[in-house]
Image (tube, rainbow, N blue to C red; front, side, top):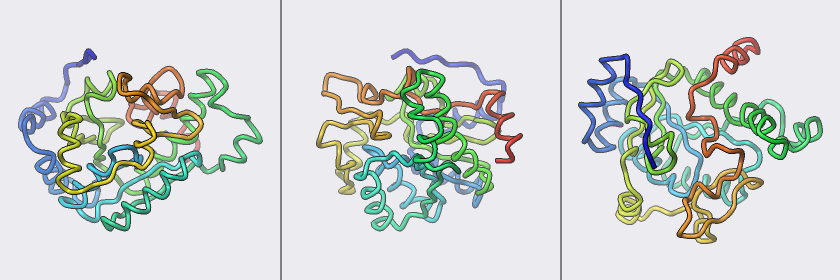
Length: 250
């Protein structure tokens, strides 16, 4: 996977990334908490290895609000896994969904995820992008921590541990961690994988667009929603998306 890197126009951001280039995830989370205080939030999908990032927050920055975007199409196992981790780690998770229910969307628009790339874009905008932006706005977030890793997609391979996305500081504590490091952390703290990992689901999203993968495949090959492997949450908003959110009052 070839990383596509763009030089930053912000020398302060460059200095921070150099300073934290070899630091631990704990160090970066501690810095974020000290720097942003109660304007720091995190996000989770309660995916295959989400327990790692959630446990780091539990240890280093307990009480940090954690946003989970609920599309209404998550696996039943995901909802149960989320409750297990919330109770075990005493997490402050805030679930956000689209204003329009999934049932109403299907009644009015049909299955958007089956309507080509434009349908997929609309589906992601309604069910993922807008709820996440609303969450960040309502929580007054100036900084957002996410458990992205460079190995996952080409886009993520081009990220740095500290970025700016849509005017907010975006922090990636485990960006450089390998699968081996993830496994070692999970074993050290006896953390569970998502229960569907045992069934071959190594990257887990909505039930209508997630399939199992074999060991010789990229885990993200199991995410079959549109051409891109990104759901839209971790990509900068386009000018049109920004205008849409502003004009709708969301």
